[in-house]
Length: 212
Ligand code: ATP
Image (cartoon, rainbow, N blue to C red; front, side):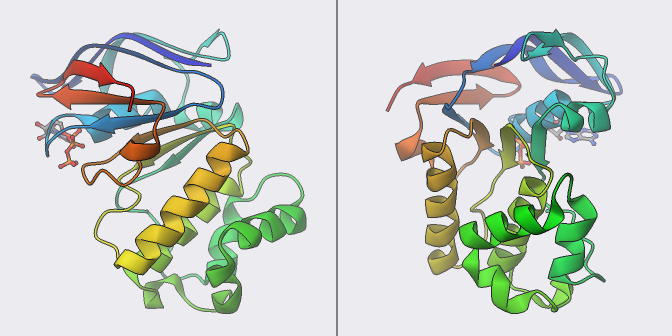
């Protein structure tokens, strides 16, 4: 489904990823681990088309997408949730969801509220007045409003109150059970135990792959 081959990424003269190759097959949960600065965010951003300079190939559903703009990658089904969530904090929960929506807005909203029922009671709240965990739910829900076919999630359970970590983990696992493939960068081993494969990155290079 997604295949990355020999990906190199540079920030100016500094190389951040070295010859990274990986695949995410239909329905798979692949977890990417590594210390701060290992290159996890860089890898997800490069897959999404947000990196300044790259070489290598990225194919998705048998199309070579490595030269495509990010919005085009989103249109064919890549859904990305950044570590910093990138919400429109001046807008309400509902407005954040609706701005992102593609297709039947009401049907999608009903679907994401089933997945994240906690959001249903705060639709009129500005997203600036939500906790970190609630904002994370909204960030994932907003990406789901685009109807993605593969999710790229950067530290979805980081810095969040334990109860909401459990809620977010369980929702992501429910999505996986429904067949949603995911590539998740995480340091905190929340999803790794449930992954089909765990890949480690160290200083921009892939290390061992483990099947838990
Ligand atoms: P973290 O969990 O801390 O975000 P990470 O594994 O996601 O770590 P990256 O953020 O991808 O790591 O960083 C990989 C390397 O690229 C680091 O050396 C980092 O300093 C560098 N880097 C990341 N973003 C930029 C940028 N915009 N400009 C220059 N260097 C960057």
